[in-house]
Amino acid sequence: MTDGITELEKKRFDAPDETRTPFAKGRIDVVTLGGLVFSRETLEPGWRWSEHVKPTVGTESCQKYHVKYILSGRQRVVMEDGTELVLEPGDVAVMPPGHDAWVEGDEPNVLLELIGLVQPP
Image (cartoon, rainbow, N blue to C red):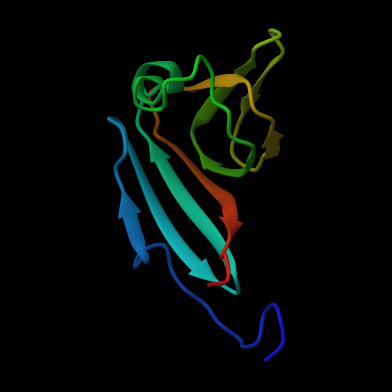
């Protein structure tokens, strides 16, 4: 068997492999295919990392590296050094560790994220 993608495959976020609700005001649908793990996050108006996720993970800021594509809504991201940007539909972004983020406006923020690789057994 070869490493990597070995067959043509597709899945839909409407029928995810897993749905996570690890914090209030959010839902994460997960699909795995071709050795990659993708998520579709739906973050409701009022969601904020420092309010809804920080108590669970216990760090002062988000320490994950993100690769995101924004489908709808807006998300503001502020780095520990004060650098900030607003993500809007059509934006692709990378976010290094050390940030806070929140939904701006009255519309849910829906985004796709590459969240990892499947680890071999």
